[in-house]
Image: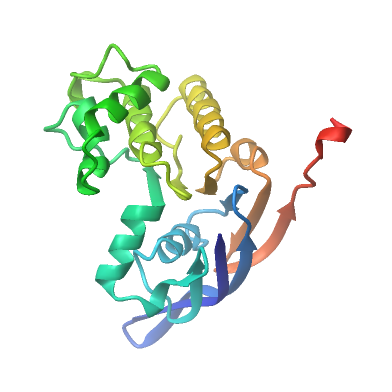
Length: 231
């Protein structure tokens, strides 16, 4: 589902060159979950942006479902994101002038889905917000806002989901509920998940992980998947 080959990102600051990412390569199979770990400044958020086609590498390539991302035009990348990718952000990124229902309807409406309202209502009910459909974002708690963001991300049933510190703005108890919800939906819909986090507990729930330091992969982990006979 996702392949990164020799990704590097360098920027010029004054007379010097700063290397943000250095020779990042990995593969992630469909339906798997990957955590990208690292301290602040390690390059993990930059890597996520490049994997999603929101930023461009200085060199290297990204393939999503065997499509080479940076051989596409910006318009074609935007279309691929709309059709294939979902996003969950630390800061929720909800539209304040819209209700919870309208926020979740938006990606469906952009696709021209004539069942947008019905599907959005169903997904919000699934994340426990069936009674909050007509509430605006400023009428919702942080945990409820993140539930809306999760509903919006999953409502299009994306093949690939990127999450950037999805529990970073939440207290521990609320964050744990959000984690459980996110992984339950991920398993139900068989979405491929790429998660940026500094939370080792959250990373441990993913099947695979990469740890970055100074823009390089310093360690990686691949979980052994049990077959049904061994469970």
